[in-house]
Image 1 (cartoon, each protein chain N blue to C red):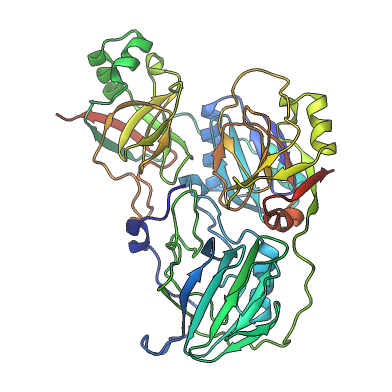
Image 2: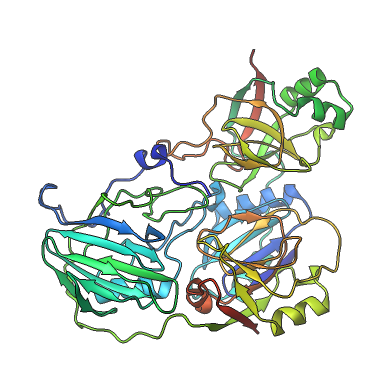
Length: 313
Length: 203
């Protein structure tokens, strides 16, 4: 997978702030998040990049859209404010100036200056405070959102990093200081928000067959809907590579490349499906046997390696 | 036209040939359908990505009612010239596959008029179709792990220019210094659907 190049991150086509943002204070005093550690992988994500598919640019954006949206709601941020998506915890940040944050998604042990704190809660960090996300017991991706949003410059209208296309903000590294945008005018109205449990050893995902179910045998379709598929370690934001019953094709030949959606179960020649997530390729040349319903995509994005998936109609 | 569903997130429209893809893509660009967030034309299909909550059945019905009239090659009216050094690693293989000499391959590639049919694979990678079927060659048996930025290549009925270094399985004809993807440019892609392309040999 190609990392984002310095060239990409230095070239921006959009102004660094949303048009509706209030003028920020002087940059030397503006709040920021200093990255101390990123864990296995942390990216900046927002609601995604829309309207550029015809140029071969994918949507990207937060993989678990529910947890990401919840984080912004907790902070009374605008819906598309950018946040940090941490994979299996390990993210450590220091507040530069006082900031208000929350952690959602995979339930990670949260600590502020060594003291325990909770997920799905408004956390006020004074200047210099250190926030640490431990390894979550369940689930895969946690979201650290900040009031005002992570204000790195957008690329093609979005602050999402597309790890497949190498587009968007550079992957945060220890020592980076990420600017925080101006706080919205609305205030959080709850300190703590109950959220559904994220992740688990087994997950059921609702699918609809197609668009290319006619490329597979009847036996393959029943195997898909009755077998257990395990998420392998060869999984990332592009897709979850699954191990389980191989799906046999009913025809020879190659499918001309066609557009893909997130949630597609694409079946390469080996027969084990790949479940496409946020950074999936815009087009693909292998048939898609079924697509996960949009409401279950956040669950799919939280399935860590080892999770057993059952697909149901 | 056959309309297939991608659960509640997309509607995949299958048409007979690339000309109909181009026509339908142009029609949807000119007159966007309600509920459609993004349009992804490809070789034989146009994917409509839906906005959250949009009704796939309603979008499917609306697209079935469209009567695209654009013709092949009508394009955007824009023509770009791409200078190429024809020194690609696969030029000899392409010659063998086509039954032409390497010089004839170069002449055919520069004489043809190409039209970007759709983009995919990577941001700014345009799949261009030409008017010379002699240049249709299969992909390489094994993909290269790294194809250099600016490589000009052939596969199937298409020619393409790699916008950045990436893995790739196309047959390499040569290379260009033309910048096909530049985020400082609006739009960033040079080879957008509908754009006509001529290749010009440079020493």
